Image (cartoon, rainbow, N blue to C red; front, top):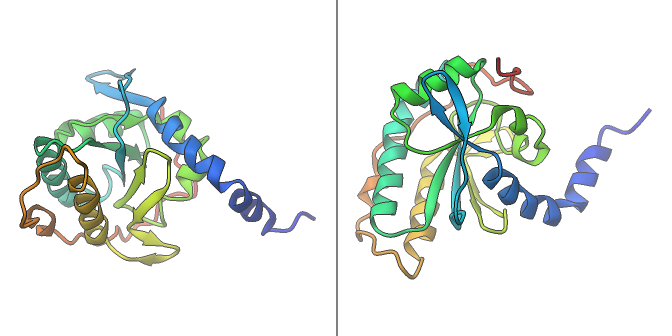
Amino acid sequence: MRSSWLPALLLALAWPAVAADLHAQVSASLMRPEPRALRPMQWSPPPTLIALYFGADWCAPCHAFVPTLRGVRDALREAGADTEVVYVSLDESEAALRRYMHLQQMPWPVLDPRRAQRMPALQALAGPAPPNLVLIDAQGAVLANGWQGRHYRGLQPVLQEWWKRACAQQQAHCPDDGATVRRNRPRPCARMRRTAPASVR
């Protein structure tokens, strides 16, 4: 019988290549929600900092967090930072995904749900329950994650790291107080996410 630690070991040995590929895979798998469908879209060029937002329509803390996420994202982009959010859906259907994005007026793209299921490095970052936020750079390196194993560090440290990294970019001119990142301290959903998201219908 194959040892249970073998897949984790192989992923660890291959991590530098996997990390670099993660940024490329995310950038190549973007979609925009429309009233009745998801449509492919492309960045030109991709941003240097990507905040991966793992959430779902069924998750009340996710709904509570999005206004804070949108506020930080908008403030950074208005300051000239080269960054964007990508929604990684844990919704149970494409209709729920589109409903959630429309209800919350998310201005950022969503990762193609079918492709997301085939990205083991991405799935490993999701954590046991939403909401989660993961910051990656242009090389695919993880700079911050709301989950550390099964311990929920929270999203505030990720927002703070995002603000610090984005505002350190040469072209960015951010407000000094960073008050935008201190509005909300969401807790994870009581309901755990599926080991793998359901097929999006």
